[in-house]
Image 1 (cartoon, rainbow, N blue to C red):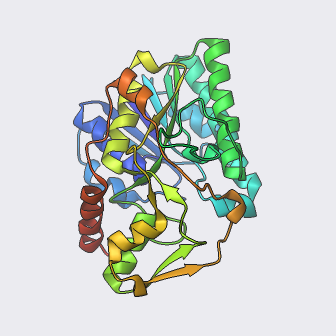
Image 2: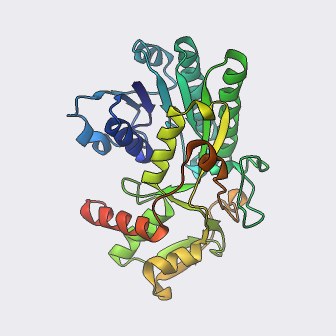
Length: 314
């Protein structure tokens, strides 16, 4: 198939591109490099099935129209503003990128009948209320402009499914981590903790550290994303992916450093948008896609640590 991946030079996007190339598809990548890095896809550029890297913005309708002069079977839409604090400080930029940019792509996909796979987020939920975890039918709580923009974009995606019969799937993976994730700023907690541990720097935890996360290794996430694009069974559906077990940030820190003297608690930068308990129920993905995670948290952490040590990120 001919496949477009927006945000394909980003953390998860890079792994989605790798999987698609491994499966033998022709792949185009569109990325403005605001979050992604060209180095993330450098190894793919020499492969015959890697057709083109386009540096560009999904808000640029002329550019998007020109990109879609190619005929695509699937568009995996991962490009987005993803930083919660940035969305609080500058909600307009997040709205324009995550909602208007998504609309621009939907318009082109509608013309070509291109299947549209939209990467949303587990941050649209309130909290897990029991050990069964959060199902796709759980109540929504848009506690940040980032979550609000993602829900707005999801609604546009589903409107094209209902109005134009466009094949679409909305994905809400839980907290994904692994190689190629940024290790600073509001990058992933696992990557930041590991970098600090390697450098002997104390691990800083926002708030009391009792908040929990369901941590999904990135290769499992990429397989989930790719398979959702392949399967007509999930057209018109919302799907989750996660490990199916949560861990408190305190316990995660102890798992990584062992020495509690190297763990510090600091004031939370956005407590109003914190989700106290994130635990994924991926029963639906298991049923419809036959998907389930293959890597344990310990295996994923070890693979991520090995990668960080092998890069210039330390």
